[in-house]
Length: 180
Image (cartoon, rainbow, N blue to C red; front, side, top):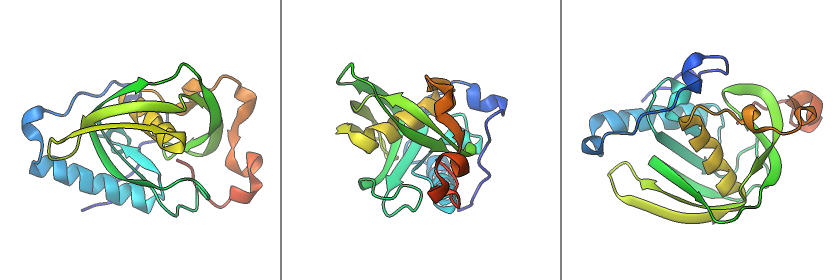
């Protein structure tokens, strides 16, 4: 439907906790329009995922997908997923560091600890239940996007700020790409 501007870090609304999507509004014109705008915006920015707050909508709705994304070369394929009112449950206490970026924090990357495996539950756009246990980059992407729903941006999770900086400095090979 429309490519919407991505809200940038520093915007107060990105630090708010999002409200659940109303149960009586699944499979609604409003939800389908929001998801269409989110998908158009994510694709236009070559993102791996997008949370509704990143386009100024304070709802617990995220989408994600990784195919042949130039910003994430060699990463595993993740099918297009709509996840409404998600709940995450780690299946391990272990945390693994890996590099992340974000469309709301353009041009930067940071080394972020995340659970390497987790279970996520929620609903698709029609109100159908989703219940998956995933690992690797898939688990990282889900955690990153759901953090947005709790007003958390990835720099808030970085333990060593010497591992946070501009992509062009940290990874000169990726200097021509934006982050997410």
